[in-house]
Amino acid sequence: MSFLHIENINKAFGSDSIVKNLQLTLENNRTLSILGKSGCGKTTMLKIIAGLIKPDSGTIRLNNKTITEQPAAKRNIVYLYQEDLLFPHLTVFENIAFGLRIQKKSKDEIQDQVESMINSLELSGHKHKMPQQLSGGQRQRVSFGRAIITNPSLLLLDEPFGSLDSMTRQNMQSLFKSLAQQFHITSLFVTHDLKEALLMGDEIAYMDAGYLKVYKEKSDFMKDKSTGVLAEVEFWNGIASDLSSNFISS
Amino acid sequence: MVKVKNIALGIYIALIAFPFIYLLILSFSADWRFPELWPQYFGLRNWSRVISGETGLLSSFVLSLVISLSVATSATLTGFFISRYVNYHPKKRLWTLITYFPYVLAPVVFGACLSFYFIKVGLFGNTAGVILSQFIIAFPYALIFFSSYWGEQTREYENLVATLGGNPWTTYTKVLIPMAGPLMMICFFQTFLISWFEYGLTSIIGVGKVETLTIKVFLFIKEANFYYGAMSCCLLILPPALLIYFNKKYVFNKLI
Image (cartoon, rainbow over all chains, first blue to last red):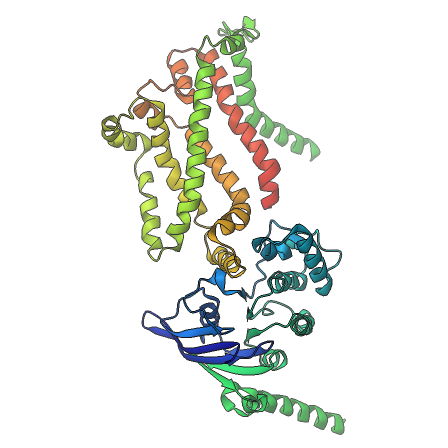
């Protein structure tokens, strides 16, 4: 059986059905990108998997254990929001060490692991700073470090780079790729950015009006008209041909 | 232009500082009769009577401190915890509306309405009754004060701590309370002031037996003892002045 196995998850708030018959499998150390418009049910789906919202029906199995009824604190699944949510009263070091302190790791262990994480995040020299003294990208790195250091079975990322400028976003995308490899992360990466979805995922899925469609191959995703890839390609081809005709005429 | 600016500043300082300077001078005075410009006696006699306990001001000061610290501590803590449940409740708007009810009536009228129940439970004319009556006014204030803290972002922090493996105790002690620290300080300060200057409820529920400093000020003024009245006013200003200083130094600067 797959590392993450989700079957028939449904969730409605009153008469509004938000997540419909969710089916999903994911192997260990893989990232599944999930593309979808705002309000399509992505966040509710992630919160159900994290244990923050109770589903109406269905089962979630992680690493061969059914976790559907387990509380969030026992699942070993970390949910990362679009905002970094750094604790404003703690330094960078203490923010990253937060999960390890909950796990009651020894002082030396915490010191070693946090120092090494700070180096991996390219944040050496910032460990004593308060969150308010960091840039948006640096804050998001600390947020990643705080989550990854706890060695979660599954990492859920809810549009984590949504509030960053395009340059910082690119840097963070490559940093996440390298961290995912280095720390063997299994993750669901939710985004509404098409390019980001293609770049970040080993596999790709599209969510629309509560339904999730997982594609076997990225090429299937690109060929599907509903994902908007073809329209995007057409748009850029039009721009490219305009540019080249202008260039020839000049 | 500079002259006008200096005059304006002078007037401003005089208007703000004059009442306090006048109160201080009056507290050191005795036998100050019109049209004399300076009192016949000016010295430490009044204040030495405070220290000797002769005037009852020292005991009133200590009693007021005990009452206000109890009210501020209990209202801030219960307000902080209970406002979480009120603000996360699906019927939040209804609960918030109910929270404003104690302010529909003036405290004196409210106290008069409640006095029957205070007599029944034996809390009429004693310190515990005064603390409870003031808490009834300060607690809704704390509930309203903390309502802005329990928003979507705070809930996201709680969820984050849960997914990092933290239990509710960790969430409160390591995140929610430290993050709300400056707000709690301000709420403590405000509820302390509500209690410290409270007169109507205290006079009704205390029935003259619980002589707080505010009650004492009015007693001295009724007796036309302006020197003791001024002295008790100086004592009345002291704790709020200290709280303003500490708040400004350690809380407001951090918030800004």
